Amino acid sequence: MTRSLGLFEGVGIELEYMIVDRSSLDVRPLSDRILRAIAGAYEPEVEVGELAWSNELVLHVIELKTNGPAPDLSGCAALFHRDVLRINDMLEPLGAWLMPTAMHPWMDPEAESRLWPHEYNRVYEAFDRIFDCRGHGWSNLQSAHINLPFRGDGEFGRLHAAIRLALPILPALAASSPFANGAATGFLDTRLDFYRRNSARVPAVTGRVIPERVFTEDEYQTRLLEPLYRDMEPFDPDGVLRYEWLNARGAIARFDRSTIEVRLLDVQECPAADLAISAAAIALVRALVEERWVSWEDQKRWSEDRLLRILEAAIRDADRAAIADPEYLESMGMPGTGTVSALGLWRSLIARLRPSLGPEHSEALDLILRKGSLARRILRASDGRPGSLERVYRSMCECLAGNRMFGADV
Image (cartoon, rainbow, N blue to C red; front, side):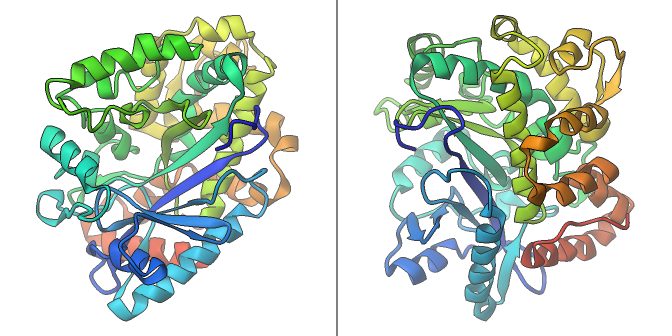
């Protein structure tokens, strides 16, 4: 993103999808063939009009993203759906198609993971050597990222404080990963449960998931990035991974392009759902930046541990997570309400934020507010039974192809 953009003057969206077999729904390592068909070579990223397509760590995942910053989210869902259909058309002769949601429900990453072997492979090999990427936390997770711009330290500090405060309740809307290894895990956001532990060999990579209380670029470099790089030196003496993107917290600063990238959203069943949840998240962050319910000074005081307690409840229970911290509820404009569910909090927030959300997101958000997170709807549709997973996840592929929501009738 360009440095000329200030707060909320643009947005970048990234959506990751699995490539699976049309018959068995097992993962298929075909992303390099798709990118080569467009670029004429094994390129890690190709521009396709308003969007770009790119590789990820493993060959069964492909990422679609806005080709540079979009002015806003209007019409973005249609653009992503258009390219989903285009990729599906390219995959059809290979007997494959795209599957949404944040984790494949029965993939065995130890046996099925294949790293991207082309350009940029040196980086992936370093990750694999240090962390062993044959695990769910590396090879079986698909997310949606929101990139928000800032101009200078003043805007960075306000944006970072607001995002930190919003992070704990994002899984309440976005959790879409209740299954792994063919069984319900007990977590509605299993992706985040694996994600927060995938760098255990060097804990500073993920930290507490909630970023530290740092609100200038200099603080970020000296208190967060430099200690991370020092901890990595014994494992990465050549500095292959010594870049801002090594930081794997739930939101990371990208000073090289003056954005903060929010990473806590599971990808949904269709672009309409992803863009609606992104719109709600952005509207909440904007309200916090504007100090609608709580001052910037008070936002900066929240510790990682206190916010993490709320996030951990949301990782486990998503929409039904109980939020009992009165100061957190007050910071979200709900003073004196006692314990509320995370979905109840979002109902209150979206009622107040709706004028800034845009009508194209209403249908998707209303379904989520009525029926719960996608993970909740998947569990209902499957009755928690592993034998029903093929039927449910085939419906997911069909929802993605049709850009329609799942579970209105469950």
